[in-house]
Image: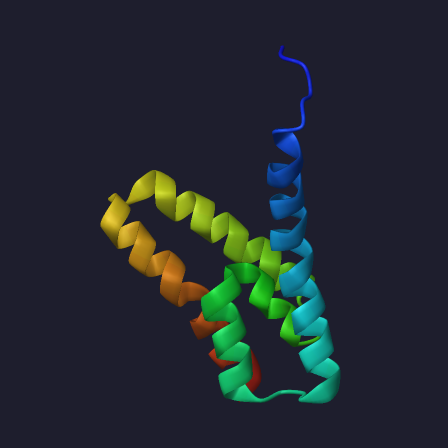
Length: 99
């Protein structure tokens, strides 16, 4: 195994930012502008399953969508998987905000 060097720091910061910025933005918008359909769908389009943080009760939906996205990559061809992954999270958000 190789040693840790300074080249890993930007990658680690990018991973941390890519995880916490969508969560922070979803929680912030949940307080400022709650339950607005286009905001929720835009967050899901940009951040995938982490966009579900915009609506309360998000943890089961994040886990379900992540499982679906991983499973779809294993079953269908790559171009079809990309389309399903792109559309699944906004469709779930539409369902959650429409009921």
